Length: 96
Image (cartoon, rainbow, N blue to C red; front, side):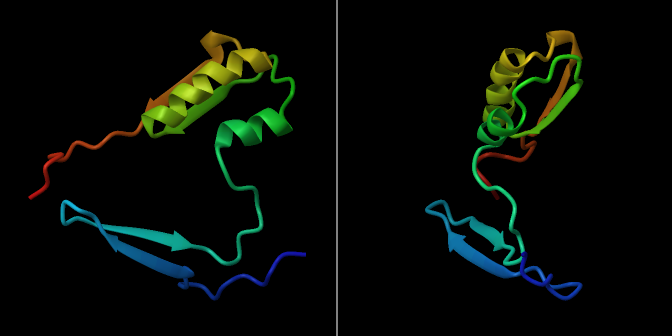
């Protein structure tokens, strides 16, 4: 049984870290998440043994997308049925 959801507008614990380059990184931990955690490719491998005939849409950071593009054919997804977007930054990598 899952924990009761947080009240609307509550996000859980927000953790902040100042990086060596001076940027601040924030991470939110949702206390009411009882789902799987870890690499999405590991979750898909465990839960979807045969995806023949399925369409796949993958979006996220380039390393995650590349890992999924390698995995999906082994589960039966045809290359022509895989669609993806790689999320990248358009900002200055050196910062302000």
